[in-house]
Image (tube, rainbow, N blue to C red):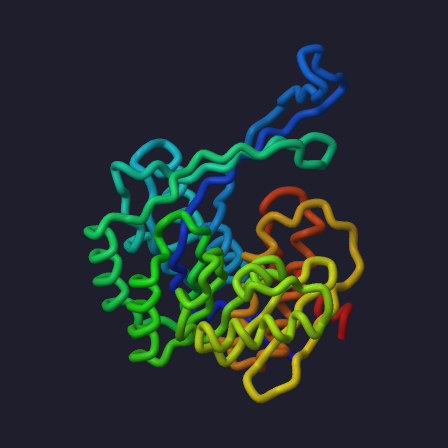
Length: 321
């Protein structure tokens, strides 16, 4: 059994697209006379960290020491992201403010515990050469202190082929494992990472294979592992759980536990966070993935981008032993 209490001794470098998730909470009691859509009467507003920020939130909830790396804008949303990261105790030395890059902000409208609409404000062009050089220099100074690197790619322009190559090279030199949650359609971008964690749809697109059967998924996994030079691949399958592929070993399917699902947003962030902590603490691939699966089951039963607490996870482990 994995000792969850050891997670607080781990140091994790999280590199990725930092976002601000905004929630407008309200109620619906009528249909608009202007169009056949519900009218949401907003009652309150809240903000949480999204994207790579949600990975950091998940890691911090487990007590890990987190070093954040990414780019934000110089406006109110960017300042809000920095404040929230600092409130979690994360080191934000690696967060660069780019004057010409607005902070990605996703606004979700929630009524009756259901998401009614999402509005995205973002840009997707690549970070500047100056920012890339600065981040690469910071990584060189940080890597020897890390137990784990997580790359959280939301395809907003930060995680490029060049940047991933420099991250992997630095990590290999320091003997640090790297996990990546992909969004690119070209998985060769993540060549050399220790573990890749796409969902089923992302895996199908990247492999160019329509996944309908376990055999289809195995074929897609084989193609992806060859394309990205992987030893380990985890494909998440929503309510069906996840499937683990490891070079030279048979695939392992981990089923999800039945529970009511309110919101799947951020579940992938929980998976890669707990998988990484499990592996960095010395657990096997299967054991770490099993823990990640339990944690994801906890967060999808909550509304909004959420995390599992240490107590919730411990109780879930005891219940499922």
